[in-house]
Image (cartoon, rainbow over all chains, first blue to last red; front, side):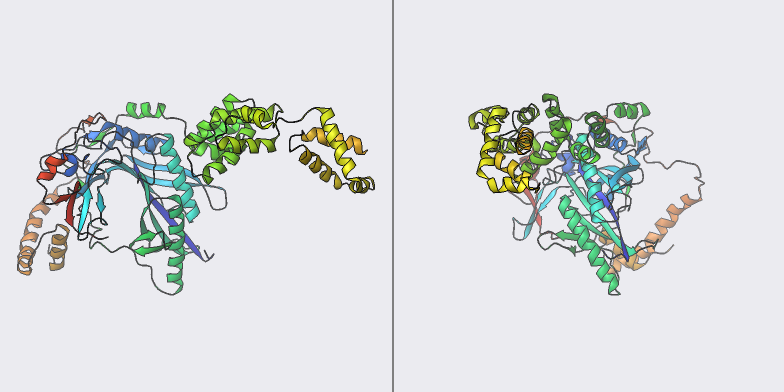
Length: 479
Length: 95
């Protein structure tokens, strides 16, 4: 982005809550069922039905609010958001408008310069999800599956506090990490449990007033959020630099073309005519209940990261990477518990080798072929000097390929480190004998050749000689 | 208070009601009368009074998070105008 312009970004994140039943009915929320087999009379909006609020949805929304230091409303009200669309059978979505359950939160994110900044959370309200429209399957008709209708959501609305696509992604990742830690959502983006709308505008740097914004709808991956916002910022700058005006509109991101395009507008769709839902009474949460939920909050990512720094002596970056994902943090701590290896070594392996292997195979840590037991076993063998770090990487690849545990691989492949001084001495002598020219160079003061000798001995030992011993023996012999 | 014909058109579009030009003209006369009648409420001093979200002075009863509904798709779909492969069919809607 040109320094002349400043982008202003706010996000609305929709999070499906991990309740068993729907927000206003006792139908199942399980993903992947046959169409319409989990849509009951309430979800279908049949005449005469009454919504009854799910206590678990209320508790989960309050948990989220407490996790972002927000105010939990002692009294919140459900409202009807009126619009017509076939996957919304009632003709309105039950949502919250004037009195949402969560207000005035905040979250620390990584800013563009790598520092920290606070992003305000305006509100988070409870609402029901709509069904799904399937446009592709039928030529002149649309198929409607209402299984998702009535699934509880919280919509988390941020302040327009972000200034780049990267900051927006950092914020979104933090929210994702929090809802996963709280276990209030599975956060599955492919299945639509975690999706985001981005409001983007640009203004001349230094100007107070906001520019005209556009809204990019339905972004369901971190990468798409980043690319869609980046595209949209560039597009708006181009429009303004051409002397034209940004049109306030809703746009969709096309990942294939990597661009945003205006959505065909639903005429007058922006007039939702909210009013309090007469079918639902105000939701009252007593302060004792809020206190109770507060006491039961699990450890949150930020707290976990600072504990990792204190307890395991990790640097800020490693601590944060490990604490961000609940399963990764558990894997790390399980490994630490099972090995005497230095905690920083464990952290390096989890964020390094393991993480790289997982992303190559596109695997989740919970389905890692190398379990925390196996990694602990491997690291113990580095710690006790049985193998070198370099050989350990080789063994790790073998374990990844399903060849068994570290100890059995070390035995079957004969990878045990050579620590017998006599044996190493033989190797050293051999190398010195084979390379008289380099020995001459070294003796005439060319110190750099020393590394060459170390390399040759290691090669001759197939990487198994203990490097420290090789070093000291070479020093001794070459003196 | 007057209501323009455009406003009548907009309201009927939002409510998905077909209103003919003739009817719209009639509504432009009738609706202001109704609104004026309701507007008498504005004379009441509501300073310091909490807005009422519901006429009943009670709070929402919550239910346990349990699944008790069973699949009744075939019953529900027997009254639907058109279904296929378990889906409700409606005229094509394009985004």
